Length: 199
Image 1: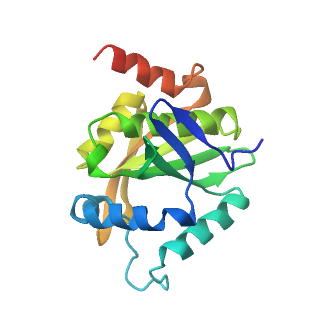
Image 2: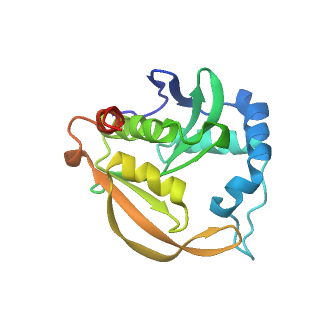
């Protein structure tokens, strides 16, 4: 089964491979939202030999990983405009068929249900087309916006991971949420749409 490349759409939202041509829109969004995203952004721990990369280097690295089947980097568009990113990371095959998902959104689109639907489309794709069995999302306990996303998706909390990721300059605790293919036979997008219709 192949999960990449893929283009997914639902009404005004499109999720498609992050591309080198996104450079200007990606940089503009990150610049405008720097203060809003900083508390949730991954950082490089002191002593690491990783160097900051340009957007072009980032895209090339992510596309190499996508071809190797370990990462799926998606751009999120709303009405044809770049709005954020959803990345499927740490794809493990064999007996696990597991991955984790991370995401960020331009604040301009926050509160409109964009990210729950984008993440739902990506997870549905991972289960239906990429053959994955379990998806996990790790969220800082203070990140109320991201917690609202997993709430809308109906993901269950499976635990706490102390000092899980280096975020905003320090090792941070995370709450862990997960979903398996068996838990959403009709897809997460259908679940989100049903919830939205009752709000």
